[in-house]
Figure 1 (cartoon, helix red, strand yellow):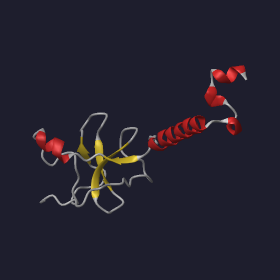
Figure 2: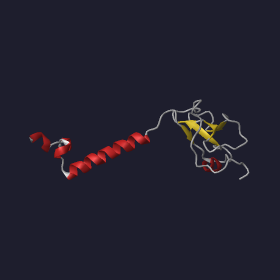
Figure 3: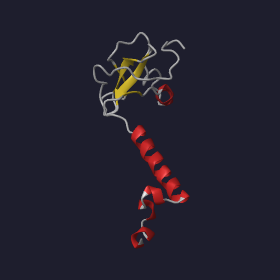
Figure 4: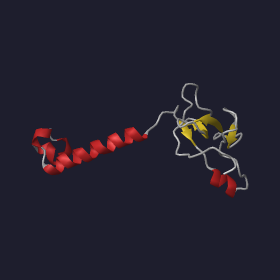
Length: 122
């Protein structure tokens, strides 16, 4: 019909060309990817960055060690990005914060991490 010339992507699916099917598939893939990448404000994130702290002359900051207390401030002190020591799912202590800011909420204080150790001497 006449309207389909201007909005070819809205043609009923049974009448779609291969190009239109591919456009639909691309659109669906992008939507799924976008939804998957959006996290909850309550996500507990590993934000360790010892390299940046060392480069700024604050070696040992922006990270947690096995001897640190859970809940202690570990980086970005007194800023909106302040982070706290939490126990990661692999049992190591990491510097973490809630995606929405502040300490991770109770019941959701187990960030994922790629960290291999939490020993200060290494």
